[in-house]
Image 1 (cartoon, one colour):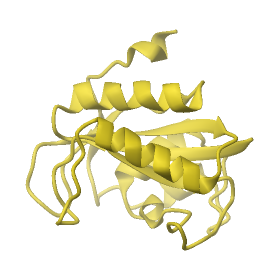
Image 2 (cartoon, helix red, strand yellow; image 1 turned 45 degrees about the vertical axis):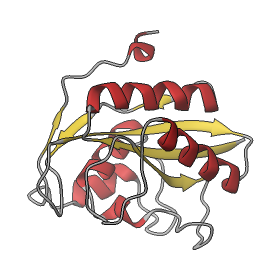
Image 3 (tube, helix red, strand yellow; image 1 turned 90 degrees about the vertical axis):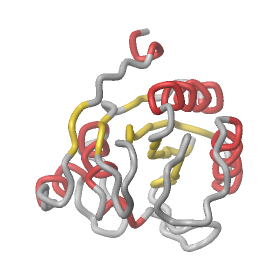
Length: 166
């Protein structure tokens, strides 16, 4: 079984799209674990705040199949191909890690934003504090403790996912 970490983000109907995305991830990967959902200001553009979380799952699927599944879930939830890097999204699912794989195709792993975005690193540190970053060789808890928290303000979102209450 492969261990995967996925970041989720939404700022268009964010509560509904975050819940739908988590439901679809659970259907796709079975039992998932989800960090707290954090709310944050948009980065790189002016827009409504985002809901962000990190999901942990196990799967027998290949890396390519996981990427395809995530893309399909995004499309199912109204995601359209963006022409701009920084823009509003119904649902954004990014594979952060696939086991301890370090690669550049079919995508860059581990995802570089782990080290630069509080909305990824803080949920990782909460959900899997003792997991080790494949390149940095530090735990996510250590990386979060070293992170300059003045770069981005996050707060726990007023959001409850029904499956988290099972």
